[in-house]
Image (cartoon, rainbow over all chains, first blue to last red; front, top):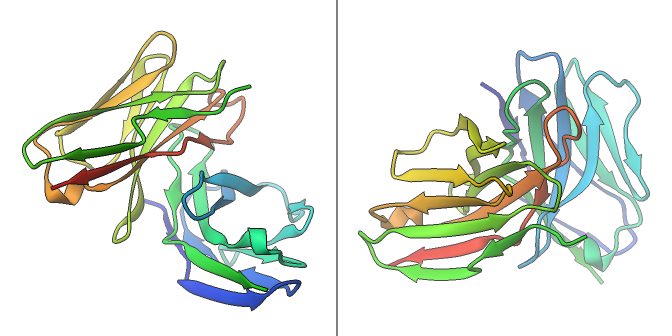
Length: 115
Length: 114
């Protein structure tokens, strides 16, 4: 069974600062995806960034980037130049490539960007 | 293209009743997954449907069931409601396994059991 752990229940930073959210996972699978999802207050969950486990290069999407350490089973999210709109719950999630589309989520990190 | 829609958005029921939630995936998407979100347990996988077939089910009692129709719309049903079933129920759709692994989430149905 796969597990995902987010060790930071809450984080708070000032606007324009850089923040890093941590995520570790446990699996015996070799082919999988990792995701960071964002859930703003009272709004829909949206995908922030995706990483395929077979790719060594870390994924980036504008101000969002990941540090994927496969051997350490670590998948952190870095948000650069944080903005007020980044305030949300952030969930790290794991998906086995073969089989049913079952996302395994971490408990989430509540990120607050202060003006 | 319209996103994932879920109806109703809010629901209040009493213990012992049953409830049916509906999810319409993005047009052309054939896979629908359901998740339960609670403050205590976080996000937990309920089940996934693809082409009207349940492909996987999470660790939930038999009171939780679902189905998918030929137009890919999906429903989930919870019978004999318990207080602990109060949660946000999220539906997610994707194009299909092996085609894309990005799941698009709906706004959810917030169920309150009194």
